[in-house]
Image (cartoon, rainbow, N blue to C red; front, side, top):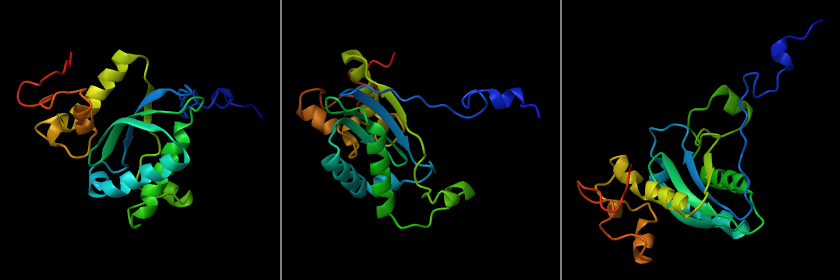
Length: 190
């Protein structure tokens, strides 16, 4: 009749993951969101659909996309939420759902996803980081805009079409040649 020691432990200690999300109402957050199958290129193949999914959710639950890069299998972005609002999880759930609904079904599904009636497009979780200050914001924006170069998708940040880089250049936040050529211009990676 005894209960094992493991069974008495809190779930996150007994082998179940325990995710604690940061909630900062009106805060800015860096996110990484990835496809379940990292070898697929759904995000760039269906960039207009992804953009429409963002717009659909932003109409009902406003937020600002400060910086973004969309790569074939994952994306990074910085959002700023409205004052008093810290619910980015619902926004991501709605964006993922809208994008998934717009694509034809047929991807392979695990037994668990079949049981939960989930699509096999996105990883269930996403990674978030609450932006602490201006330096942290700038470092994450640099990371976002350099990502296509880092992954070999473009020789220069300006060459990647699925990014907010050109918007930042137009706003005077980056020079056009930032992250260009053999010697990266204006990027301190140390």
